[in-house]
Picture 1: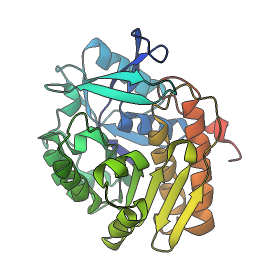
Picture 2 (picture 1 turned 180 degrees about the vertical axis):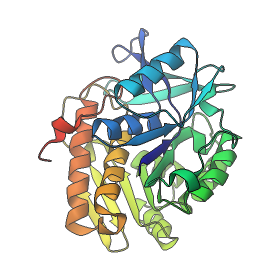
Picture 3 (picture 1 turned 135 degrees about the horizontal axis):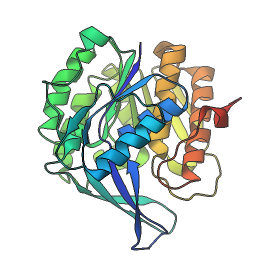
Length: 304
């Protein structure tokens, strides 16, 4: 039994300092960051995406393999790697410009996606751009419907409005995935952009009424909120010297997936959920304390 993480691995071109025009290539992509975190925590994780044969693709492949992410279910492609050109504000907050079209990163096809009936994964984590960029999103949705017969789905919209600024279209895409998911991990910024007239609680309660078991809302330095049918659990953020915030939310998603595998989704309420969110806040703080989506290792969370 294994964890599946599906979505993009790409190259983040990140400034070497806030405001700098000098950029350094780091392997990124929300789902790849989540897979890397899970592997560093000692879990058996398979990453599912198209990986290019170009130099950036080789760099991504090697880094994932170095962290012991299993790539047996990934697809090797001659198309180029997707690039994310990152800008950092004075507090280290990241914004993105993407080079997407014609890349290996979004080259999904039913011809190579793994059959869930054969592998029977424990959980599927999916999200970010692959769930909204056509035609990849439609191919993946049809595939995820099959996966949902065998495993719960964790969805992270990880909104990138610079790629799709049509709010109604984005909301429709997100809602389709939410309806298929057992857990949704979402940021307060995502919710504010998607649903400017609704409170976070209203959105979460609507999703839960539709069948979602747990909604985890990340709020940056303010911490995390977990909402279930039984109520809300809130934990504060962890104070760190922030280098950048790239990959922090992806780290939280990995901790939630870990808890689902180790404790079961129905156990994630009350005190147990509080413990999980506390661990997630510490892990995300570690990620923020170093450059370029470098999540913690298991040893760094010992005793948490």
